[in-house]
Image (cartoon, rainbow, N blue to C red; front, side, top):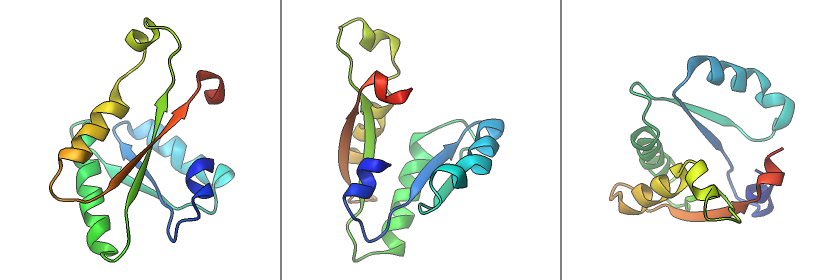
Length: 120
């Protein structure tokens, strides 16, 4: 979020795809402790799918603000050893690919490398 804020966007929103009710509730309850100035949009996912609810959210967001650019900031984990790629989920790459292929939106994608030490 720090990187996204540094872009000084007209609007900045965080989106959470809710696939786990308990985790979502915890996130909602703690959000204001960390990022009061960034609204959190929670998108329910009936079938624990991250991609389709996100694509629908992006399409709705473009309709809501049609004259503004939409940039999706995706954190990607930097792996220093080939075997680390096997241990980490490839969700970011999968999401990026699906956003690029989706004809419903014109979102730009900005991948931000995150080192494992930054996650602690």
